[in-house]
Image (cartoon, rainbow over all chains, first blue to last red; front, side):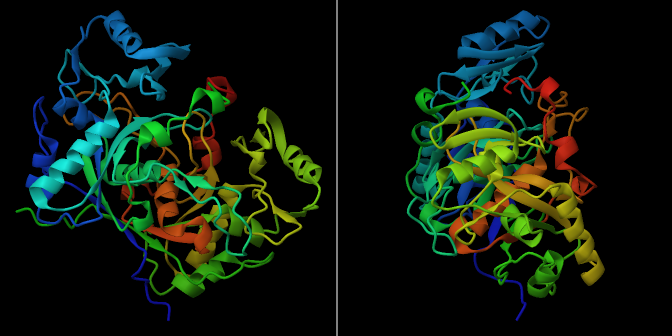
Length: 240
Length: 240
């Protein structure tokens, strides 16, 4: 039969009702309040960096009329400047992320303020995961996502900057392909793929800073880390 | 009420039943055969490059016992070699893609053969879209996906190498964020995000070379092109 298959399907569900987040807000409490009735075990909750940073108070005043103030902040958040062109500065952050402007963002925040990246986004994810378990008794994986550009390809996509309860990279080494040959491509960054899927229902301008990805392969649901699994060490990097 | 929201949800559905694809097979016919009863207008069908290339006969014999044969093929498919390390060669293809080994792949193909990238993947996607419209009377967008690595981040993710009926990059310039400020990050590569979402249900080793993404924002469903929208021209590239 050609009926639509029921198994192996993924659902990506926007989490509505999250209002403006302020320093000191507890995200697990906010999410439990708007999605507590329908979150299920093994769901993956994706939360944008912006609200995580706001809740954690990672805000810095910046004079909106002084372009140098923004620039100084970007450099203070960088351990290295990789490239400059016009207003764009590609930097490496202390987390090892290579991104525009050290992740410093002045959109979706009150004028005169900039949002900085969380100090330890894996830890931010773990805190939300632990908070949801404590409040709801539900084991949910968490991804903190941010929007990065890429060299060679236009447009930005969302990637994972922190994870908890989800693998960063899944190692398929030793697996065989459908013809029984050993796989050539072996390590899939499922955390980034989950972040990308979530972005499709969130939308920068729609004020939806979280989504639930339901149906992720249970084999991917283990303790994970962006910092230790995804950030590529300098020694193995061909393009730094 | 906290009920699970019904609107704005995305579903990612594996397309099962696609067998081994051989040169000359018509993919629209194969997909219509296994998913024709449940494909809906505005669905996005994601098909992996591997089966597209096989159907198009983009195969090359390669001596499996001679490492230099594979290397020669990789270089023949490249317009430029960007980096080498051991067996890994980062090249630029004639499409403008920067990827490992010019996309030449010897997994999931019979021993003694290599699969090459389609000559014009946007055109491949359009052909499948046109074929599904002709067979089923359904307007479906199509993404041809492939698995690329990234600098700075470990693990591979699926990206779009060809699209039809779906935007490559969505320009949010001029949009305002939830606070009424103009958005800083403006261009989202939705085609790559759709490819990444699809990969989560396909799985390299599971023999599922296609998936349907249902519920994509209708504003993204317009004629698109990877080549003209996503491939970054050298002049604006900071890392080539």
